[in-house]
Image (cartoon, rainbow, N blue to C red):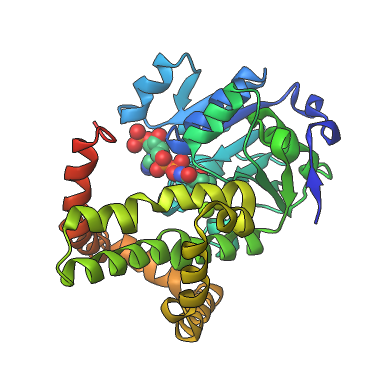
Length: 328
Ligand code: NDP
Ligand code: MG
């Protein structure tokens, strides 16, 4: 494991460089503001008339079109949605990339799966916070940061790693620690994590628990509290103190029940399916499916979204969160 902290990084390498941050969404807004507040020369690249344009101006950022920002910058940090990056790169970024520039990302998707190709004399780097933009910004303002990842796919200038690390330092990530990885590892594990565990796995686990209780005749609101609301409390404990800390904090009854029953819920069958999901990612099958989806205006995603939106747990949760003042 190679971990970098503030003391290991010389941010001076960016002193005379201009950094274009393309996109002003979750990551773009947080990272560009942190970098600007750390004293870097940042220009935000956006499409004129888009919703973020005025927002970035209101935040006091230097805003230009994607083309102008790319043209005048040494480092182009692409923080657009992954599915639009290749198109925007081809039309509005790549014509302005010069030898010795750096093209940077917070997720390796488009480079690893070769949707974006960059000339050999240009750096291809990644600096990726391990959390949403709102946290990147909030922790930075609290004089801390969230951990991050750094990876180098192409080192055209010989100091690509130093450049990427300095960007991470300016975002506040090396206050917590920046771990070295590769584009391949970051991309494949990130996709797997969100599909099997973080976004896919956990929602289905919650939903199955909720449905089991409701189908057995218990009140929906009670079922929601037990199987969904309390997930955060448990995850917070695991986040702070690991499994052991969580087991220590819950009752002995919960510990005995959980440890003795969990493998009946998630078992070898689930793991076999997880391995299949990972193989689909590694072989590019998932990526192909997602590309097709985007070529035809996301029909499956829209259908799945509509079904999810109407799910009983969502309707119950929305009412309950409102009634308890958890959501305004
Ligand atoms: P967002 O979806 O929040 O990005 C939206 C921004 O992109 C808006 O400013 C939008 O501008 C702009 N945009 C969208 N389409 C275009 C276009 N065609 N031309 C110009 N601008 C456009 O992205 P995220 O911040 O979620 O993700 C950015 C990158 O960070 C991705 O690579 C992602 O994988 C990575 N990442 C994201 C994390 C997260 O927590 N969200 C965590 C770690 C990495 P407009 O207002 O004009 O639409
Ligand atoms: Mg992720």
